[in-house]
Length: 234
Image (cartoon, rainbow, N blue to C red; front, side):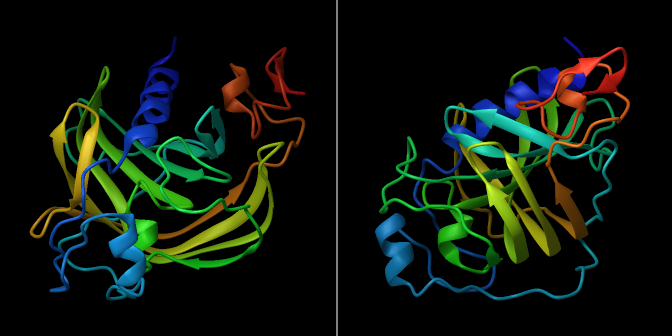
């Protein structure tokens, strides 16, 4: 198994349990949440950030965005240029959830095209987010030293098909904030004075397009629909 494929498997496990603990305080000065219901009652808004804070390193992809699938949901994955310890792996991931998720505590939801704002507090909680965007930094084996979740910016989905894993969209001005680990694969809300990362923009397209170079099926835009044959995505 290649390093990126191993990291990819860690991502699939991690997103399944992201945000098990209640939300606490937030660095924007707002009150914390005590759970999904409290998040909904809060009105779903935190402060928006439109320019990269000086303290937040800019993220750069080191590979293509590809389709990911697990029994928890579908999403996109891409390796990142390391922003912390160069001896470990960093990864971007976006998980789209629908129906009753394994950890969800809110009504069913079906993915549709539209624009979604990460200042909505429901999107900042792994138990309630429907468009869960995250960074896992300094990954070693199955240990994630620095997990982050999107807390500002937007996702514009122009098309989405959860059944096939094909969706097209773009992320714009995404602020990621570090979240605290309280137990093995169990994280709380963004740390009040934690680290941050910034992603200016990212285009995502996981439609099945043949002809690209590959070494494994996971190198193709959509591994669910495609196979790597003789070094080409088919």
